[in-house]
Length: 77
Image (cartoon, rainbow, N blue to C red; front, side):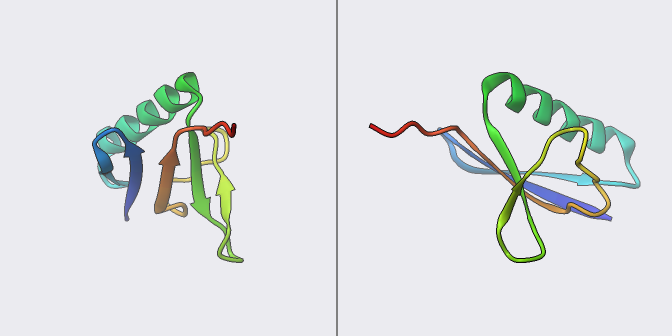
């Protein structure tokens, strides 16, 4: 099973993919998660009701959560 994470960054919308049959790609996405958490970025998956649901490494399932979105934290002013 494959999945995609959309990363909103200075380059626009960067896409990274993983394949559960290839553990190396899953580890690469786990590293993306760690870097995101360290930088204060937010990672979301689509919930059943169509809303975003924040994801952490403890709750991410690469076989079920196949469409993810990563965004920077935004501060209002």
